[in-house]
Length: 312
Image 1 (tube, one colour):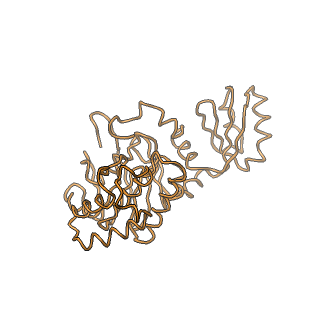
Image 2: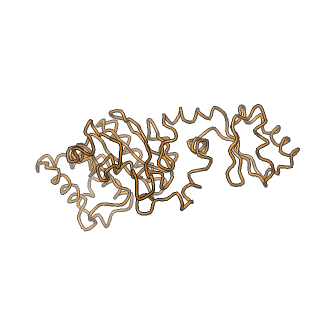
Image 3: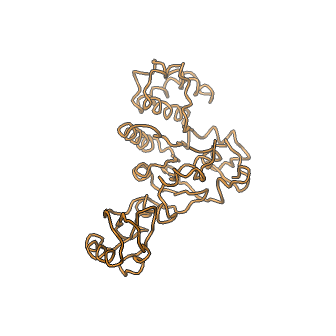
């Protein structure tokens, strides 16, 4: 997918299994939202092909739209209407009969714990309540696939975890396939059966979170230094990989806890001043760093990688 001279999404390929929760993880400007919008028929790809529920996204957009639900990154509710009115109007637009709308509304409101608040104006809902109502709205017409674009962006930690619970419960109870975008590592780790890590328009790795972390194959030692020849660590036989980013060095190390004294001695002998050492098991952040040489936070802070008006 091109915007002027920028390849926002560049030759990616992936399949999503029926009933799966699949995630696209990456920084702002990675191409996640653009990918989601193409699959939801909101953008037409400049090349290649894609299908949702076996339906080509360019040849039969209406059929695709009837079979999906979409929760956008930006709020898309009518704040001057009640929760019930938002859901009812959405279902009416999808051709649902009045009796079916009423029954389904009760089901989705209960799922997201908004039953009893459906007659309140949306402008009186908290941010978390609005997000839950948007998920309920996306489910009203029994979609085969639910697209969630940064579903917990801007929410506090407690509310974010509640949203995760709703997504998991909905997936288990209805078997709805979920495709979500996120730049929260923990969100992808907790929710997704498989994750595609995106950077600069390409998928750099794709597998289950556990398998992706196993790619590192060792403990991760983070050293904060004052400089020096950091490449010297590459020569150590127990260091599997070295990645330098800013004033920190990430070392993939077998039996990391036991190797800390040797590493500190090695650094001292070569004039490398180590301010701090942090040991942890591999995370999805380490996987991203492994493939790209920087962290998601560093990518987010780089304006050169962003696509204005397309991704946030």
